[in-house]
Picture 1: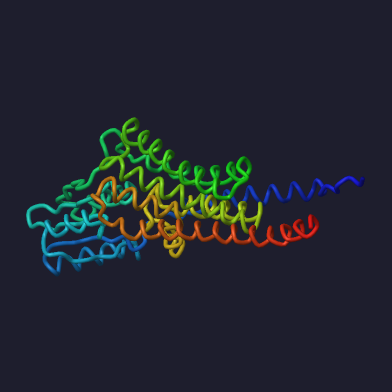
Picture 2: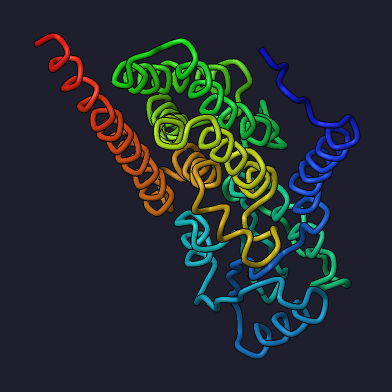
Length: 327
C-alpha cells in the first residue's frame, strides 16, 4: 500500500502565508478605508444657508454626504426616525443644531458631532442625539461585537451537522432548531445582560435566528452539492466578505464604494441593518434587509433540495442493481 504523497513544506508555508494575508486584507482594509460616503443627511433652514452648508460639507468631505433639504426641525427628526437620514443640521436663526442618531451608527454620529463646531465657529451648534444608544452600552460595542458570533454560529452549525448527522433532512431540522435557540440566547445576552438592545426581545431574536439559519442552510446545501469544497467556499464568503463588509462596527455608508452595497446583500450585513431598525427604530428601514435574509433562507432551502435530489438520483441505480442481484 503506497503512502499518500504529502505537499512540500515550502508549498504549505506559502499557502498559509497567503491565507493569513487574505484574512488581514479582508478585515483590515474596510476599517482602514472607513470614511463617510454619500451619508444621507437632512438640512433645514433658509435656502441660501442650506446651500452654504452643503458647499462647506462638500469642501470638507468631498462626496461624504448626500444632502436633502427639509422644511423644518420636525421633518428632519422624522427622516432620522424613518432611517432616511443618519442625522440633520437645523440652521436656526438663534443657534444652529446638529441632530444625530447614535443608534443608527455611532461612527457617523461622532463625525456629525465634530462638525457641530465647524458649522458656526462663533456660535457652536447644539448637538442632540435623537435616537441614542442604550445607557448600558453607549458606544454600541455589543452590537458591533455580535457580528462575529452571528457568522460563526451559522458556519459552526453547518460544519458540525455535516460531520455528526447523516440524514440530510435531520441536518436541516437541526440547523433551523439551532437558529431559533441561538437567536433566543444571543438576544437575551445582548438585551438583558449587556443592555445593547432595546425594543422587542422576540423581534431581535427573530432577526438573529434568520441570519443564523440563512448562513447554516446555505452552507449545508453547498456541502450537499459540492462536498467539503462547497462548505469551505460558503464559509469563506460569509467570514471574509460578509463579516467585514457588514457595517455593524460603523455604518454601510462608511465602507468603500461598491463593497458596502455587496455587504448589505450578504446575511451578516442585512442582519446588522435589520437589528438596528428593529431594536432602535421600531422597525423602520427593516424591510429590505429582511427581504435579503428571506432570499438567503429560500436559497439555502433550494440548495438543500437540490442536494437531496442529487443523492436520490445516485441511490436509485444502486438500488436497482441490488434488486437485480437479489433476483
